[in-house]
Length: 167
Ligand code: 4NP
Image (cartoon, rainbow, N blue to C red; front, side, top):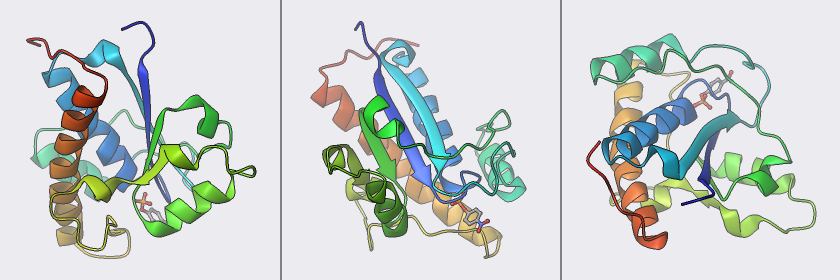
């Protein structure tokens, strides 16, 4: 494929949920030998944590499952991202509202979806914000994001007719 499929995951701070989604989705893409087919990024709708590493509790949970998100640095979602990315997956309805608010001419809403619409067990369709809670919240987020990222990759392989390779 000539042009990579551009995927962005969005949460509020870009230090907990969306960095994990970015890391887990990239891990699954690489395991299928599809790294060249994708450009994967994440951001937050807020700017408070720009430049920061992922939250230590999220990094620890990821590490426990064999995933490193140590290289992540937080960034803020930009209006230009609406044009630049093919698919924008938001973690909760507040993120959805904030991203769509930036879509002044309602030109890109078809690209923006709640990530958990793809979760086989979608609950309320939101990935809960673990920031104020305890450690178990981070594990809960990991389980949700892991199984949803798996389905997302399957769907994109179908949609774009990609051929997985031995990694
Ligand atoms: P995230 O979690 O949106 O999953 O990165 C949060 C991180 C920071 C804040 C809220 C949520 N905060 O209010 O600073």
